[in-house]
Length: 629
Image 1: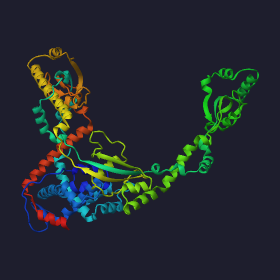
Image 2 (image 1 turned 90 degrees about the vertical axis):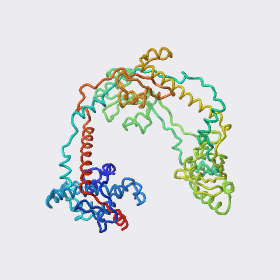
Image 3 (image 1 turned 60 degrees about the vertical axis):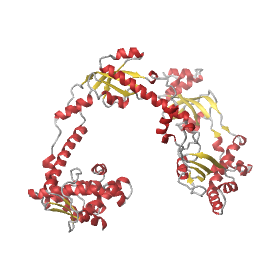
Image 4 (image 1 turned 180 degrees about the horizontal axis):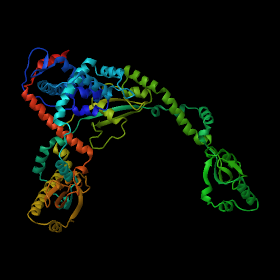
């Protein structure tokens, strides 16, 4: 639970709850004497320190609120019990009680001024200016259902407990020797020699005898049972299912065409070149050169530019970024050069090298498309009316087939399908609308009853009915003999290959070399260098890497190949420690986490020792009474 609270501690409410409920320590188990029916209003007694039923209920409700936020829904009492929230709260309160008792014995305390200072310093209560805000303080406490006086009392308890906690764990870090050992462990790499033993070493496998197959099948009969099948009929209702193109008149099509002609128009495009000059004088000199017989290409070259520098591409008028260029370019003939234009970047000359005229699709070209679109639009408009008409027909006693026929809807029937959308022959029915939801509902339904429709997106429905149920049953061997034989052979290959691999592993351990074994089997000995402990290696996989790091240098092992069902026989030939491994090579987050874990272990031991010393008593009856009000 502490982990959940820590994850939730990004919000100020959760931070406050974490502070008040558990302070800085972990969740401990409960030891000591368990007393039922102690009497009075105390849930926990630890020496001279008591925890009241009211305190237990407040802690329980706050923890329930935190967990509800984590799950995104209000947790019920039964769910809380299943999650162990009652025991978690009790463990926290016991830990707090024994620390309070130890503080009482030691005479520890904290002044009200210090409590006030701690409250003012709490970021949860600070306003936008970074200073304590009384309105924020009141708001936060209302959110967790706590009175200011209760907060201050609890804050004082936490401050006192913190004195004990800090005495045990403040500044505690794991030793450098531990960090170095971890750095050596994580940074180590290995060189591994290996031979992949393929299944072909033991194949082909002969068919099993009748007795062997029968016994193998009998031991695994449940794997070959026939699942429950259902016969399902359904009616899909989407706009395309009721669109009636024949109801759209030629006049409607023509009117839509005229109203939407721009949609069918491809604007004129022109391939434009523009040459920008540094001054009006330079532009005029170029224009004069053109009049004297120079070509546009020569003028471009004279300006020290290539033809690629002046290309704008093929553009429609509205896509030309400079309005002055657009206006001029769309008045030119092909290969005509414009007069000097005052463009956005200075004086320029423009040439159009290619003109693609505007085209407009004719009504005949697009009438089929328009008719379909109009029919779909009308279908969208009346879809809910058709839905209601179908429901009315069913309510009036019509069958699914009859209701669908009246509305010109198609009925689709699947004679037999299981929960995974497979037919009895193993093929998949892959064209069912909303397949997962429909099958889940169909397998919850009784036969021959009307069901609520399944939604298709935001504008569609599937009406369905279960017309028959074929219960699950055991199959006889003759029904699945071919599959059983195939499965037996797969298992037999694995068993025989495993036995052979074990035999080869023993030979390797007894002194044979991988080179010798590979040569005998006509296989290749391979070498994997730089293998890291946490690698997901393509040849070994994670399991194989773990096996390779599970033996010492020169150690031998076997591991399943990650693909193809083979076995890998390997030997670790070299082990390399990382150079310069020490605490500094570990991430700071890792070092902090390990040190915190060490501190938590010490606190665990402290609380366990205090629980034994102060003979903790827990009244389960008081707990039940606390939860009942």
